Image 1 (cartoon, rainbow, N blue to C red):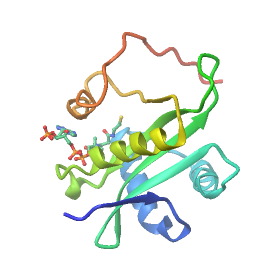
Image 2 (image 1 turned 120 degrees about the vertical axis):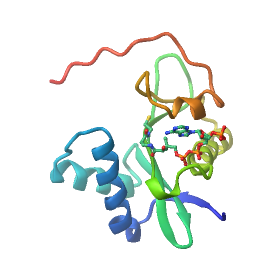
Image 3 (image 1 turned 60 degrees about the vertical axis):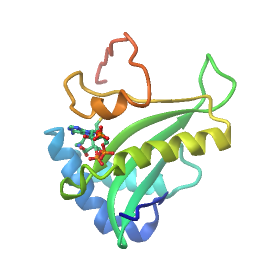
Image 4 (image 1 turned 90 degrees about the horizontal axis):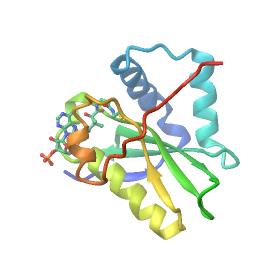
Length: 146
Ligand SMILES: CC(C)(COP(=O)(O)OP(=O)(O)OC[C@H]1O[C@@H](n2cnc3c(N)ncnc32)[C@H](O)[C@@H]1OP(=O)(O)O)[C@@H](O)C(=O)NCCC(=O)NCCS
């Protein structure tokens, strides 16, 4: 299967939106249209720290990785937080998520990022994939919605 990983582009919006809805369903969450619209605009805005990468097969956008590039207190160079990762259900098991992650690793090495990191639920079966890339740390997440 020929998979192209590239930066998200304006014309991806209809296909991205379907995947984004699927991602929200997976997390049993409902992100408001105003947040979704803003997230989309931020990804297209080169001034924003939010970026998107998509996986394309036969001209169809079948997966995405959303990242946030930011500074940190422990590093001189950019850190990359992988906030969202999703592959269309019918396209799973073909290594597409693996390629999305690998493309971030490759980009980060080229760009001089100091770290790529992400969170997941303890019981997410995707950990089988993540364990092939990185060691898991023993930090736990505290979160307050303000
Ligand atoms: C997680 C997800 C992105 C994986 O996409 P994918 O393209 O199917 O993953 P890959 O084909 O690259 O997976 C590669 C390996 O990980 C394993 N794997 C990945 N996701 C898995 C899952 N959900 N269940 C079981 N195994 C999984 C595959 O079996 C494969 O292992 P192998 O190479 O040893 O055979 C996809 O299942 C998805 O979108 N899930 C719902 C959203 C989600 O969980 N996102 C991550 C939130 S942190």
